[in-house]
Amino acid sequence: MKRRALLALALLAPGFAQAATLTAADRADIARIERYLGTLQTLKARFLQVAPDGGTSEGNAWLQRPGRLRFEYDPPAPFLLIANHGTVVFHDRKIQQTSQIPMSSTPLGMLLADQPKLSGDVTVDAVDRQPGLIQVTLHRTGHDGDGSLTLVFADMPLQLRQWSVVDAQRLETRVSLFNIANGDTFDQKLFDENLPRDAPGGSPSR
Image (tube, rainbow, N blue to C red; front, side):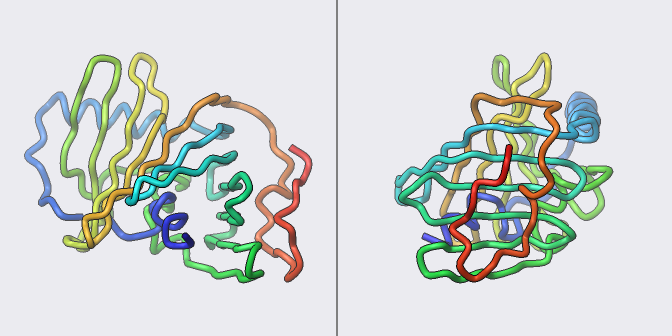
């Protein structure tokens, strides 16, 4: 189950497809998405995660750019994931185990960057459009074969609604956001990754 949680937050380097030949419309949409991500300062939402085996879990998510994120899973899932100070911390309350991953080695770094860019260290594989939706599939440049990350946005106006990760074994984990609120001010204790060994996951003031 720990692996499912890490996949859900795109902690594996994404890439199968080679870089797409982008049209002028694709480049315009990529520029719009970059601007949107650049202006996205805070986000709070409920999330629904669908694992590769079809299992589901829900919880609350908080995002504050640059560099802060909290995913708190509803019981009985014992997981808590926090990103802050350049580190992603994963805590399993059930076994009281905490692990850490450098944010720079994950696609979370792209979403939480001060100036998000869908170029350079990130390669866009495809831009797809459906009525009211636009999605961008990408991978970390130079890491072909490790997986892919797809971001799904509602359009007009843009709003991040979903992401999915396909890992190196071609297993997909999908996270959908709902009840989204932007612009809130958060208690910074939400993003405190210094969890005590006996931490119950806590419920710091929202």
